[in-house]
Image (cartoon, rainbow, N blue to C red; front, side, top):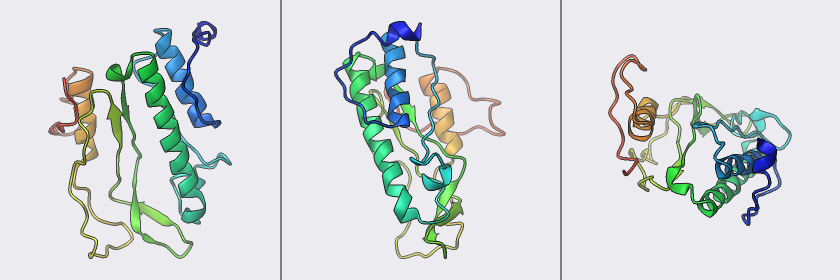
Length: 184
């Protein structure tokens, strides 16, 4: 039971917020061999409003930094916790969002939805580095921003085929190449 998993004594210190609590619970489940194969954890602003975390249509400077700090410190503690229990090489963390952000600030000091996004992948078998191409800094885009360089379905195909060992055929309307993101 989950109560039994909480008897595991972890040395890793987690930040005091809901996101880090969920990550700590995932480590405890993994330590007790009770973790499901996929865990979905969301992150909101400290006031609970997703618009004040990453869907920042207004006052982005006020809210976005705190959300990024919770993400960074939570994931760092999660990595340490999974390493502490010897499960880091069996762990893949992949962020996702259903839309990107515009690089252009709007009148409310925020950004609107855009075409492109940045995804983060981490784990003991992740090949580090940047994938894709940087957007030219000198080019100014409309509100929607630049088109994606890598289709997000390539990331999902990589997870399905190279992490889970399945086939992505038929999952999407066409086939997508895997990314060189994972090592055996």
